[in-house]
Length: 187
Image (cartoon, rainbow, N blue to C red; front, side, top):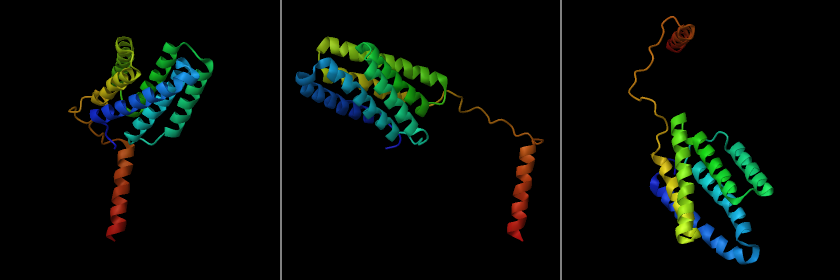
């Protein structure tokens, strides 16, 4: 699965929402709701990060990204900021990874930032209205699934290519090398 589409995002949203609600419902009596949420949020972030890696062809920097994300998740878990800020830090990490791996311009990255903010609002709204972890997490990742419709770049695709400069030293050297190779292989 290289090119993500909206339906992939919907499936991942349902899967992650089910997993989050099951883990929270199972562990809350033993550890307490806030403690379980502080474990589930980074677990969901890691699962979504792996989904993003699976849907992207860019292999460069994946281990570094995973290490940086793990370091951020560990530090924020250890510092234990207020829950809202804790969630925002993890959403910001998701936004940063998507910006680095899926977009080539600043404008698409800012649109994705707006999408991430909208997903946080959807999470809050769904939790307030229903009180259901499943619906809240599902709404969050459902809004996140819309990122596939943000273009990689807003550059004009129909713009003509820059004309090659005949006096460019590199172009002259390349042409001479091509001619030399043609002479070698034809003789």
